[in-house]
Every structure is written in C-alpha cells, then in structure tokens.
Amino acid sequence: MKKKTIQDIDVKGKKVIVRVDFNVPVKEGKITDDTRIRAALPTISYLKDKGAAIILMSHLGRPKGKVHEEMRLGVVAEKLEELVGQKVLYAKDCIGPEPQEMAEKMEPGDILLLENLRFHGEEEKNDREFAKKLASLADIYVNDAFGTAHRAHASTAGVAEFLPAVAGLLMQNEIGIMGKALENPERPFVAILGGAKVSDKIGVIQNLINKVDVLITGGGMANTFLAAQGKNMGKSLVERDKLDLARSLMEQAREKGVDFLLPGDLVVADAFAADAQHRVVSVDQIPADWMSMDIGPASAENFGKVIKSAGTVLWNGPMGVFEMIPFARGTEEIARAVTESQAVSIVGGGDSVAAIHKTGLADKITHISTGGGATLEFLEGKELPGVAALENK
Ligand code: ADP
Ligand code: MG
Image 1 (cartoon, rainbow, N blue to C red):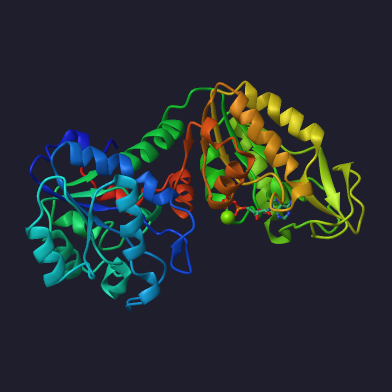
Image 2 (tube, rainbow, N blue to C red; image 1 turned 135 degrees about the vertical axis):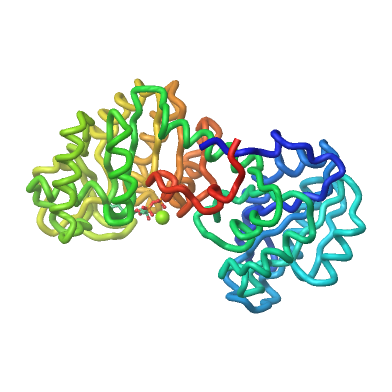
C-alpha cells in the first residue's frame, strides 16, 4: 500500500507536528552520535522551504512515564540548532500550556522541539486523550520516525486519528526502498543473513524464502543450519532446540527453488576471545573444543561471487564476531563484495549497521536502514502500526 507523503500535500502556512527519532546516545550530557538527528534534516528543510512551522517530537531513552533530568531533549535542541543553523525553540513539556503558547506564536519556518514524549506514561500506552493533546498543537501530522514505527504509541499511531497523517522523507525512503525489494526486486535477489541466532530471525528467514533467489547464511546462525546437516560444530554457538526448524527452513528453500548457501569453511578459535588461538578449517573438521567465530576465506570468496552478480542485495546480520578484530574479516569481505556489485544494496539491523560503518564502506550502500526492531519486523512482512496509521495514496 502506497502511503501519502509530505510531497503529496500542501503545508504552506500550516503547523506541522513531526514524530522524529531523536533517541540518540548521550554520555555525560553530550551526544556521542548524531546520525539520527541528521537523518531528520531532509524532512525539516523540506517543510521549512515549503513555508510550514515545524513542531518536532521524540522520545529519548526509557524514562517510563517520569521526568528524568538526564533524558531531557535540551541537548538535542542545541545540536539541532547547530545542524540547521537557526534558533530552535524548546518546550519543557510536550503537552500543556507551555508548548501550546509556543506553538500558537510560531511563524512559517520556525522550529519547535517538544520535551521527551515518554516523560508521560500515556505515550507508550497509546492513550487517546494524550494523542489528542499532541494533535491540538498542529494542523498536520508527519511520521518520520521509522525506528519506532513498529510500536503503536500515541505519537506514532494515536495522533493520526486527529490530523491528516503523512510520511516524512526518511520514512518514505525506508518503506519505499525496502518495500520495493520485497515486492518487486531487481533480480537476482540475494539475501545475506547472519548474526547471533536463528531464533531472532525466524520470521525474516520465513518471509525472505518466498522472495529471494539466493539466501546466504553466515555468523552464529549458520552454525545451527550446519549442525542440522549433521556437522560436528564443536563448542560453537548452536541452538539445539532449533535443529528441526533449521531443517524445515532448508527444505522450504529447496521447494521454492531458492539457493540456500552455507559456509564451507570457518575461522574457529579455542575460546570466545579476541586473543584466542584461531585457524581456518573446513566445516567437516571443527576440533571438538573449538568454536566457529567467522566464515572462512573460501566461503567469503564464494559468497562474494554470488553477491557481485546480484540485482538486489539485502543484508542483515554480521558474518562473524566482528567486534573482535581477528574475526571481522568475513564481514569486511562481504561488505566489500556488496559495494563492488552493481546491485541495489540494503543493510539493516543494529549490529549490521555498526559493522558496515566500521568497514568505512557505508557511503557505497544504497540504503542503510535506521531501524533495528522496526527493520526486522518490516522484513518479516508485517505492517508496522506507525505506517498503517498514515493515509493511503
Ligand atoms: P543485527 O543487530 O544486525 O540484527 P544480530 O544482533 O543478530 O545482528 O547479530 C550480531 C551479533 O552476532 C554480533 O554481536 C556478533 O558478535 C554475533 N555473532 C556473529 N557470528 C557469531 C558466531 N559465529 N558466534 C557467536 N556470535 C556471533
Ligand atoms: Mg543486534
């Protein structure tokens, strides 16, 4: 279903309330990574250029319905001011007389940031009255917070009942690019799935088996599939209770004609540590006391060839324990193959995005998803409440 966006409506002279994801990491009163604030800038500058007054709302951290001084959005207001190069008004609450008065006085182009939504317990309860109070500040509602779109909260879902509701540019980008990959991909469509566990990604694997031409698995997840094929995995992380499921998923892939690729060699170590002894072995020769930490060089090369000839590549989950330098190689090689291919490339998932930034190749990826849980739910084929609440085209 195509959703209306800010480009489909007239915002001139209107007050527009925008749900953004400003849930940035803050250490000792300083923002340590402003990526999420930057991600909202296209929508903010679009609305400003079109003559709207912009009211921004977000959560930060988990204050659980109480005011926590260290979770106030004042630091975000300062950072935003620096990034947009203009005064940003900041209300010390998100509802009530203060934001009401400030909103009433706003002129086109003004920017107002409301206080942390989650200082009110009603936000996460999707309370109707609370949503109505937020809506009363503006004429139009925009959701640009893809990262929280999998939650039905007052600011992501409830508020849409009271105002015309459309997607911002970041939201449009996320659901547009990933939606096309799922519905009408350039082929061959290659998915690369890794990370720690099969159990975290069952829904994603299940959905992708119906869409892709090739499914590559690596990381800890591959261990469970290899064990299901009868390989002796030594001390590797294996989900013993998921062996039947793993077999059934491989069977489904076979029935659908999906190429299901597993690593043929692995980097194994004698301990789960960066300074452990390690070596490359075939998946048939894992020493009993050793564990898989990364895909091996032959696997990286084989996977790389498939990736380079893809039309669409969707990647979730690192190929190894990339946080430890000796075991980051497989993930780096795959990142290189993805960026060397002509494919539309999409990377999603918290650790996967961190890994791609570590390789320094992030700017060569077509789309890096800003969601963690939201991205996974989208890839599972679920309709996200924050997207469902928006008007259809
Ligand atoms: P994402 O956040 O991108 O969805 P996950 O959270 O599923 O990814 O997986 C990332 C984690 O998987 C990393 O912390 C990484 O160390 C771990 N991992 C990858 N390969 C292995 C392995 N062979 N054994 C244990 N852990 C692994
Ligand atoms: Mg993770």
